[in-house]
Length: 356
Image 1: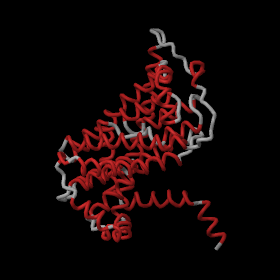
Image 2: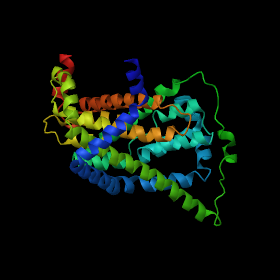
Image 3: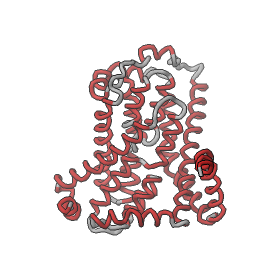
Image 4: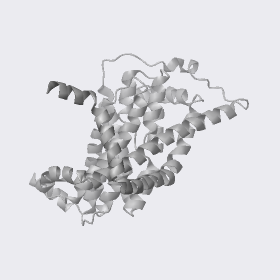
């Protein structure tokens, strides 16, 4: 038995990969369709939304914009988030661009020794966020057919992110090391002129292509994984295990499927939840706020692909995103409850809290 247990631990991933390959063959028809849908999502939505931002961030890394931001924003970033002013760069770009730009920039700054390990872990916990184009366009207008919904989700998403940043200022609080940002000009060549602009542009595009291909691979992979889970009835099994919790709070069990899918991959989960016919739409939006804040396992692994090339721990990211999901849902509930002009019925949710 000890030998058998040891063998499983040693070959765990080998066993998982073999099972995955077998399931690819068994459910080849549905997997093919899922892969096509994942590719379509990547080509039609992700590339247009993120690829230009990846090029922009690569180009900006060859300028002194990070030092400029650090100089002017250090008096805000250090007391609020316990990070240097240079940390404002991944925070701003992470909010504007969307997953996983913030995490990539933090890892780049760590590799250049602009940030310490502790500062990087504080930043990565709250700077990797969903972008306004995705929240306002895809979720608000595309899924819920309502601009107000997108605005509410964007506001609560950013508020939750900043709240997590304030909380994580105490992460490794006793770490007194300071990043090498004062000497960062010696790390990166900031001289951009007519003679090297072609080389810089070419390098930026190549690096951006590698990053966007990496994201596309994760999207297609998780589209196939979700398809396998559906075809093998694994999601139904998980739903059966958690359904008593939903019954306890008198919540429609259709949400469990959306939450499970959203836990794996954010877009599929949000789409499924938005299609649930329910009178109290506010509840659907609050669930979406949580999934949007958490980001899903797919985004988590994308971030891990960056952090694995540094000494940054993935633990603060996981804790931070889970906390952001909870805070996003809480802030969304508060907005709907106290701002009646949003005209969304929260009677069912209030009854749940009263019941508890």
